Image (cartoon, rainbow, N blue to C red; front, side, top):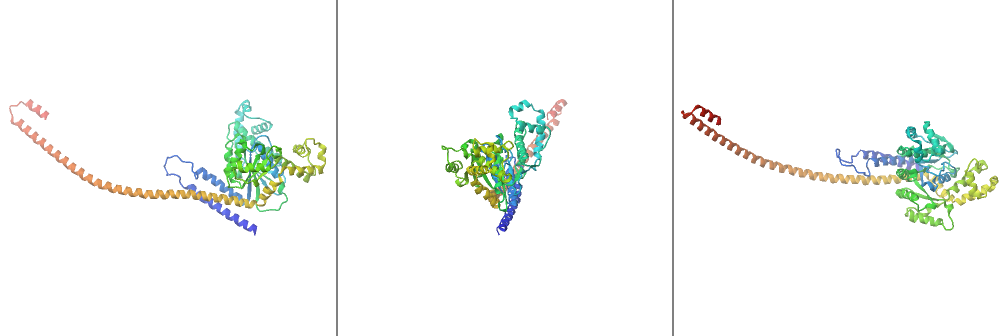
Length: 523
């Protein structure tokens, strides 16, 4: 019964989304100004660029509702530990950690039951290939010494530059953690290199969520749970102004607005910093359109003089987030401890022991956090002690509560989140469309009434013009007749005078002929 109801609701939501797309196409054809009008166009809420954004929003919701996919967008600054938090949520390392911006492009991490080894799909790789060709030419022409002044060239960047010079393209498919790390690190270094060489990175080509990279892997915390309708996906978003790219703010706002829910990762040690303020502003811009949650990372750095968990919740809920989130949706945690503890428990459960610290460096971090600074390699052989230490570290990380309250709930209700997201965005779209159409209808009604008044005034003016024209025509005719009469009278007078003079000339015979000729010429 539940599944049938869910199916019917999703079908209805899909129908309404399709109908909204059709109506939006009709709106797109409506002129915003009179043809031939050279007046400057204003940035109206339903102008061409905004209509394109609404198309993208509807297409995104249609894609999610067709898969019953719940997209949990995760946003945070570079130093807040966003990648570590995502790794802790997933239960294994799927995103690389470096002390520099690592999310220039959004990345989806989709829970895929049975997919033990992560796999990355990057189908829309063509814009990156075009960028590599441009960078290849720039690298040939640029001064390497000048490039080193504006760009930090480490071993990863040097390998990327060598790869570009050799014309090696990005693959569409990567299997395993290390190839995925290499791909994501190269993408982010590509953004830095493009900026240094003054080449535009094709961010706009990855505005649509179906074009961004997708990692498919089974979330450890969800493994073995009952199967539910729907799909849970995490969205790793770029931080505000990450990698010195201020236009990423627009991409961040678009991704947050299209998500089913938003999880903010804040730094416990930098809650009032400018960088965390940018994250809070991005979240507040979303408003109440999506559910909000907050993880306050690095809570393991709390001391006796610091705020406790309740004080942190009150500060964020009341002061920093301006009441748009309740304290129950705020979770102080240690993402690093949570990741290390769960990674150790996963290795013990599947391999029966931890890998050597020399091969995987996270083991050393785990031992330092769980066993203390005086740990020894021999301690790692005591499996029971290690298992107990991992459980205690997991408990100390405080990650169990958000995993249960957020991740498990999101997984079990992913289909409902997808329906809620579609319904909410449909409602907002319908309300905005109605307000806009009401405004246009009011404008057309006012214009129509004004047009009637103008037509009536023109008709009255035409009648008055015809009357004045008739009066003026009579006066003009009378004046013409008077002028013609006067002209005829003047001509007759001149003719009579001429006749008299000619008669006098011919009567006077004594007058010399030359004088007669002179008078005739004078006349």
